[in-house]
Length: 366
Image 1: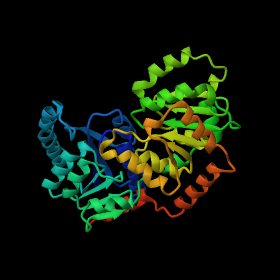
Image 2: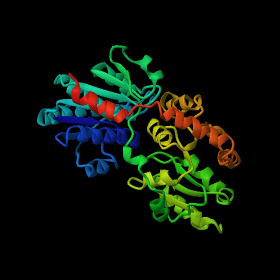
Image 3: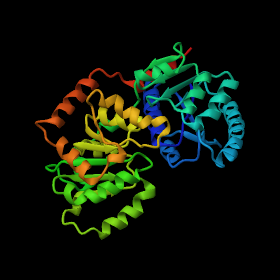
Image 4: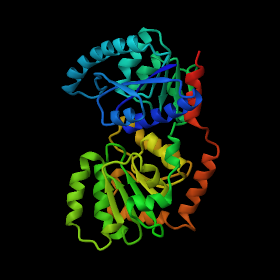
């Protein structure tokens, strides 16, 4: 069986794809061939490391605002479609699995021209423009949130949850202590701004370090483009407990151990990040990106907040005092934090294995 994979170049697109790939390989006893078609991205090496060939194509970004870049990106779309047609013709996939994002549009259009079945998955509560377009060509549309079903044709859409990698739940606290050189008798906080980092979160965490490190130790994933600047700032901070603070541009293989060691996660509200945090049964402080398209990050967080599974701080309200107060509130095991943990466990007990469900649908699609 040959499966063409496509998605935008961020972790929110790639990690769910890899979760489904792992399930497909198990279900097909390895008798399946993959090809990923998408934009040039730092995550392409992660895909290759999973034994998946990558074909880079042109893809113009779908903007809903006026920009001179729209003119150039408009040219990229037909080029990307032509590239996709040649790629699809040579690879001859049985089916296409799209994770959305503007880079998915050319391969999906190419597959539709060749009349190859297309299955797509929408992670966010409110679908982006790319997936709204892709849904017109798709044979079946899976959604992470039941609230998303109303945006798509009722005869195509299926609620499936968000696929996460099983390995993310297989971290080891003992190994984590050695990997990150941290203790297990001090609460650990994982700060994660998504694959692109989060400048505002980074700034507030650094300003809060003196107070935070009195009670917690921190694993901070700051984003590759922010790493050198943060390292430079840390060198200038004179704190006796600075050894409790560990900063990284990103984590791949060791992320599971960071989750295992952590009590609390501070994160943006990408659907994939939220799904991983809740699946790992972690308390969290979620700071949605205010500039996300259709305000989808806030709506993602709101969905879980209404179920009592996380707490939200709007970025406009984020400052050291607010962050410290909310974090220390969660650390009170006999109160707010303990209740959140209980609700998360109850929620998880009713969740299906989304990656397995999608893999079976792809294999059995007629």
